[in-house]
Amino acid sequence: MGSIKNNIQEISEDIKKYSPCPEKVKLVAVTKYVGTEEMTDVLASGVNIVGENRVQVLKDKKEKFDQSELGSKIKWHFIGNLQKNKVKYISDYIELIHSVNKLSLAKEINKRAEATDRIIEVLLEINIAGEESKEGYKIEKLYKELPEILKLKNIKVTGLMTMAPFTEDTDLVRRIFRELRKLKDDLSRDYFQGELKELSMGMSGDYKIALEEGATLIRIGSKIFS
Ligand SMILES: *Cc1c(COP(=O)(O)O)cnc(C)c1O
Image: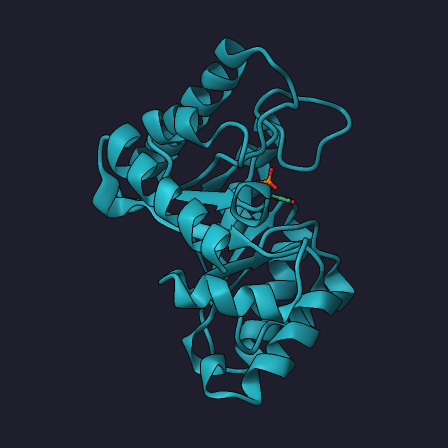
């Protein structure tokens, strides 16, 4: 267990070191690489937000944890590409969906949330670099669909998420994060009465840059588990 604990400790120190507002930053432990045993070590290290990118895996792990008292301690985040027909498997309990990237998905989440009398918090996933291979809203489509999304009563948009391109070019990565931050500030002012708060950006390779650029949720997997 030593190393998971040490890695988390190191990341916690980096949050204080690199973020201008460390008290607003939450670590999402991305547990897609590991089983429930390693996840128990994560919880023991004081991290209770867990991110998964596959519905079936998330659901299986949750069912396992629900058999123990740890079940109620975990806040489950969904971070991957979400298919509409799978929303129903997580809509009862998911704390945050980071990856809303189309209106039809937002509508499905809204419908499922309504059915269980919940308001589900979501982030809009943005493809800042406009890469063809990537999921996420391109800016133009975002502005087109946002008014419709805002009409949905059972979802609450609390922020934006992006994945930086896979590159050694740290200036480019920083630019992408900075643009997401700016977009968040613009949308917050124009559509959210200043209440759009969250910026989910930064993974194992680039979280320090993301922190410097204002990330409030960093999604870290390999750095915790290697
Ligand atoms: C896997 C994954 C991460 C974590 O990546 P690491 O480089 O292992 O830290 C973060 N976000 C998403 C969407 C992922 O799929």
